[in-house]
Length: 293
Image 1 (spheres, rainbow, N blue to C red):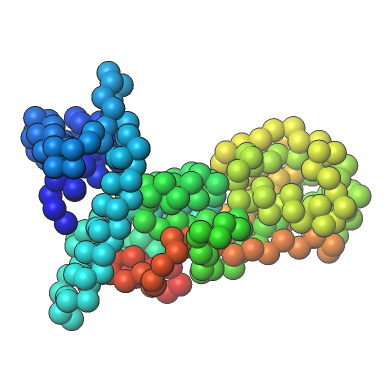
Image 2: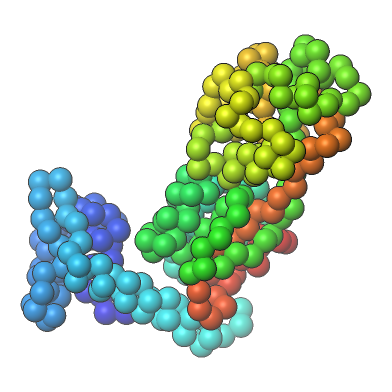
């Protein structure tokens, strides 16, 4: 891809001339000159400058979409022409929701980096909603989420089956029962994940199916972190919902208990989200192959 377009993409991503210069390892005047020449070529401004940085004009937004498309095509051509045994190089931007990032992704990255040390993986954390937004804005190349994505302009591919369970302190009276009824559950205090969390979305949908309205629950606290919920539950603030993959250590050491609720079983999939189009090849294809390995 034309180097000026690479400079343009970096400035658009960083929203800063100085930050782009640092990332590209060139001087700020050089970045400014590349952008100036690009704007002269197309005879239109691509950025609005201010003391807070730069923002894209309408023309800049259009060019950014095309530039990233060109970059993806170049990546695919390089992958097709690459001889077997050669080392992949480049950078991949992976957006991921918190649960996937904390409890599933580290193992995948460890395996991936052993085989492909020359590929830089940039992790962009958030919840499922923000990850979907980042992919739509083309700020990431691949998204990893834990909630359903019903947008028709994106596609989902499941890669891991998970279960959301109700957790309690061992001192909670419900943890000593062989099974817990929905009525007993609805009368308890709860700690919930924040709005936009994939875990919360699944929980609310399944509670609704069980005829339990979230607005009628006693939600004493919300946290944007599974770790915070686990600690609050262990300290007897209330019950919580957690991914089974996230509580392996706590169940083993006895600091948390899983409640058996026969009429509430919550299963879900962790999924990749991708833009519509041909199946990914190149760096994206290589990374995706490690998610299920």
